[in-house]
Length: 201
Length: 201
Image (cartoon, rainbow over all chains, first blue to last red; front, side, top):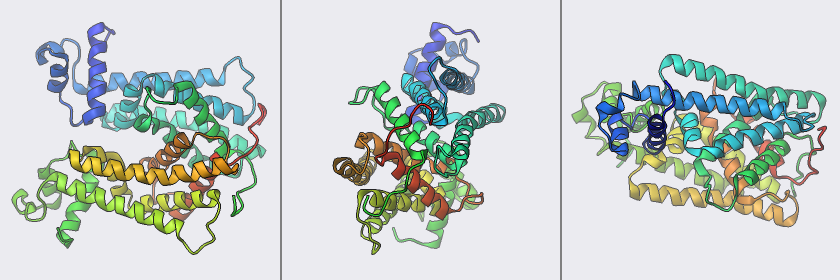
């Protein structure tokens, strides 16, 4: 379906309702009411509630993939696993903070998709997570990183970054660029090889 | 309301439905159907769907608080901020893995509570998060920890730990004790003072 102004408005309103009440708790009638139009005229722009969720989720999946690609093929000297992990983390946080509402729908409601769409996104999420895991595996293998479990570390880091939609306030004290940098630092330190803390640390 | 076997069954079934379909997507009729009893007889054991959610959420809040208290007043030599943070993190992960279903409802659905209950839990969650933040502030002040933003670090760590309900499989490769230890290691390393990674790390 071509992107129109009305369609974008629908997705904006739907994102905000899905975040507020959940996908299951939002009806097409709620979306129509929030736009102050008739349900029937809404159907000129969408075929179903799931169609809107799918459009939001698929576009966010595209953004996360594109940002990860760009982070790893950037002109900057991105060489070791620590720097590559930092770049991936910062890219993820940037996508999240650029559109907290839609990122929140992607993260919180992708499981509400119909079976076929859900399977597609599950596969894309797995592939995306494997980028993180591969870098951590490499860092562990070369000894740059501590002997962490790469699958656990990747899952912990990614859910931490996804959790940003739950607590981050864009009008707060910490700007998006600072947040991206802070998260990259925390994530890289979390896996970097160091001596463990002594009981007095 | 006193805890009875039937009441516990209701909360078990409700937890599993709330996780699967969301609180908004679950009706009292769904709960009755899953228990194979009449809706009317369900009301002998509960006053409303929110009453069940509140019971689940409040008990989980109690468990998280008790575990944090125990972690910080344990007999073990828990002295420096690194060790205290590790103890808090491990305690949190243990509560989560002991009852993934109810922990998932607490984490994912506390915002679905009625206004008064939601405000109560918001306050308790803030107080709980302050335990993490206070330890991180202390570690930063004493120089044991890197110069992280304590509020950001606490939020990132806690949402990472809460995210466990999204990906952890109790029948998988990593047992609950190993997961708790792995998370404690990641969290402490994330904030511990070290030299930053060089581009080749």
